[in-house]
Figure (spheres, one colour):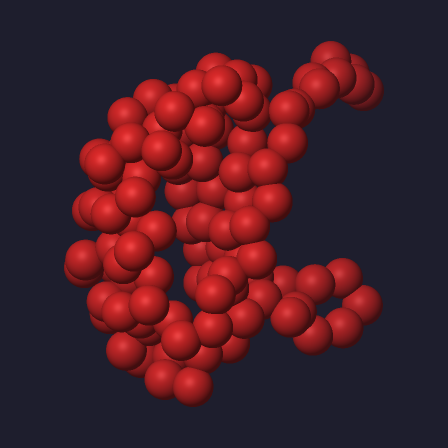
Length: 106
């Protein structure tokens, strides 16, 4: 599995961000081909202090090649181009292969 995280700092107009993000941006993101799972949260908290993030979005793909193809698709490009409509500051985007560990049983 390959995961991408999109991290947004607090915008100048949080209400506009939330409204546009939920009503317009997320429906665009849901159309990106090859996504296995996606999710988001506005309740981003940090351990031991304030969070630098206002919103987090995550996507999972089969592998890095699938993510690259998805982001290069017309749908992926439309999502990237849409960010300026609700966030004047570009988000921080990280992606990585996920190495899973077996759950520890108690």
